[in-house]
Image (cartoon, rainbow, N blue to C red; front, side):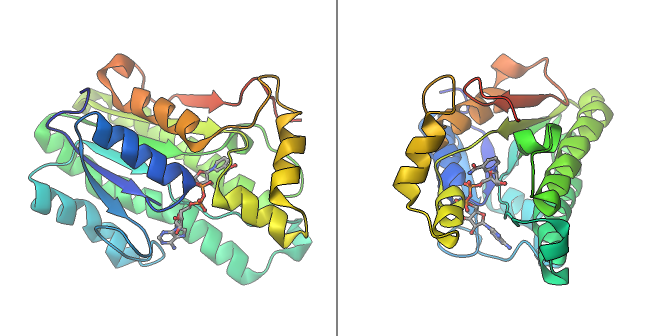
Amino acid sequence: MRFAGQVALVTGASGGIGKAIVAVLRAEGATVATTDRAGSDFDGDLMDAAFCDALPVRVADAHGRLDILCNNAGIITRGQITEATDDDLRRSLAINVEAPFRLCRAAIPIMAAQGGGTIVNTASCWGVHPGPNHPVYIMTKAAVASLTQCLGRDHAHQGIRVNAVCPNEVDTPMLRTGFTTRGLNPDTAIADLDASVPLGRIAQPEDIADVVAFLCSDAARYMCGALVEVNGGKPVT
Ligand code: NAD
């Protein structure tokens, strides 16, 4: 029960990786406040700046404290820059970058007043090593990685550890919808991807959530600003 007595806030909690993060934190004793567009404890749109600014305080008011923030929600825009619309750009920056920025900015004073806390951002291996044909998505994930490194350094003295998990492919609705949109059978496409991973399979959400839980836990007490790649041995090519 690594998180007994702790309160966590998880964004994108209804999604593939989000559900797994919520499950592992709850299984180990945390009280988890979930947020997503629907079906969560605090439903809302992360494109709504006022919603993001207020959410950490609302969670702390509801549960008495805030120990863990997982900025996990995200969207992916596929295709080269010449295919990207203004709306793609605006939404990607708002959901993938501005929302974590606002949530961190609001959560850090609460954590500092408590004597510490931990933030885990879901970046991507592509945020560290850019892959092809996804510049809008990749630059947002690079921004999340950079924000993580900055905050990891700036707030360690307050007992606040900020780290990021950087997955390669994970079997979630985000990945599967991408295949469907491109007219591919998701199961076949994932089987092909499995063959490209040295460990023999792409990640399941739990593979990522377990690393998030580790980063949230006291076992990672000396880690600040780390970008932890979780890739089954598959580098970005
Ligand atoms: P997912 O689509 O299953 O889940 C994303 C969740 O974010 C959804 O529940 C969605 O409703 C929520 N969300 C999106 N826009 C929102 C908004 N405006 N307001 C509120 N909630 C919103 O995807 P996932 O694969 O679980 O992705 C989780 C994170 O992991 C993302 O940040 C993604 O970029 C990252 N990631 C995923 C992969 C992968 O292969 N699946 C790889 C690397 C990184």
